[in-house]
Image 1 (cartoon, rainbow, N blue to C red):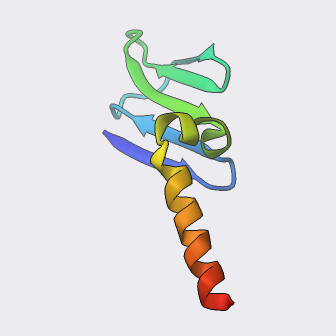
Image 2: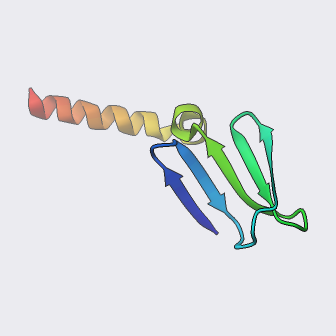
Length: 77
């Protein structure tokens, strides 16, 4: 398994196998599943990942981001 993130596209891709993609299906808004010729899942792409999913999947991100900004603000002031 390999996980990659494209910052410009704001897309997270989870590659499960090295099989070539034969078909893709948007299973819910902004989530695309890739299948091989045997209809087995090859990978999952989550579009607008940070914008749409990070706070749902990783609630700690908001707290960490707030703490970092607060620390930088105190250092600058």
